[in-house]
Image (tube, rainbow, N blue to C red; front, side):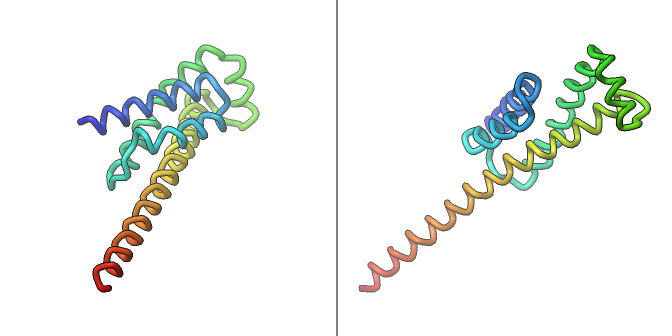
Length: 130
């Protein structure tokens, strides 16, 4: 339960960062906070991706509906019929990039931990054999 609450807090943090700062800085914040709040699990990536997608959809639909001139101009630029479709596409892209940034940091943390464990077991085995 504690891990799910940490994931929920991380998703809220990422969504808030995406609303307040540029997207690339949000990706950096998501990647930097991932090792402290998230765990590398089998279903964790999918769960984070879905929840990020849903929270980004809510945020971007409210953003695009409150700034209809900007949303209409961008929709016409990309020839998308309605701003909600633009919000869904944007939410999909942002949630995928943010989730992958966090997952890559978690995999790096896992890989370094495995290397450290192998080194300690190798040194223990060498000291016991002598």
